[in-house]
Length: 356
Image 1 (cartoon, rainbow, N blue to C red):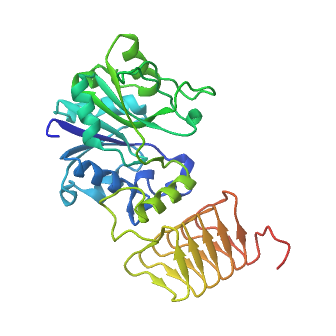
Image 2 (cartoon, rainbow, N blue to C red; image 1 turned 135 degrees about the vertical axis):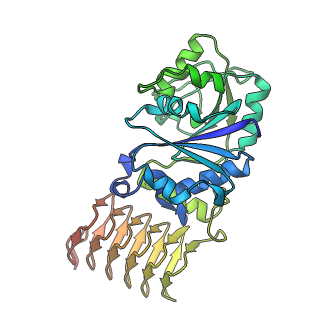
Image 3 (cartoon, rainbow, N blue to C red; image 1 turned 180 degrees about the vertical axis):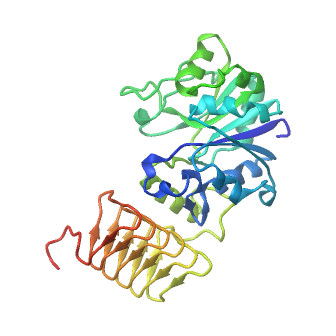
């Protein structure tokens, strides 16, 4: 992989994950005990790539503050900041001046995947492609960009979301570009690779290759995907070399306190300094640093923000609780609710059940 550099696009605002992304970019949200981006960078390093350029924009300073020059990860990291949103293609073009390798592997910074990156690069080289797309087969391709290929794996079309997809192959958000192709992307304006770059390449007869597999893949754009992806990492279902401990039913970080009769399972993560009280049940959830879940409370498939408190007997299911919020005793939250930071719900303040 000496002839391959990586570009990771991490400039988005992550609006679908609010309120979590009000204080941190999506790729920096705690996921299985570390920022999500750490898992992706660990896979890049394991594949043998040594240099990566991060295309940043929203809260750009947080990336370099955490990862620095990348030496702790065994990588050489460079940062390029967009002053205005440029889209996927524009973001790739914006970092072109920092690239020097013959081939460039591009990653969307919000995708959790287990594909063999060396195999993707091998497909790109052996086919002589201008651009190679990692494609993954999914059961319901309607919600994604659909990419049919011929018998040799050459891409025939690039179709955005369609009700009647001709194939179950979707764009997985990982590409390999020949360096010259990046230079041909228009500079200084927003460009979408999905809607402009790839269709234009196909129209001009460029060789766009597909690398198809059925490896683990999840778009981490919604709270539900964030908690499920994190749980898959904790349990070892999704691969990562960045886990801060061995895989298992739970990841309890240093300084956390868990009562001996509490139940923490389903791939849950308990952040630094978090506390879980007697008889509480935490299933498939993420507790950020300093979060508190009091005795008898239930948290399922949810995110509890930094310093937030879930008081005794409350139940939080499929919900995001913002930083420093307080969920009063015996409240019931469910059905994709989102509690903004610093909100206090009084005891019994929100309930679905009539009993008190």
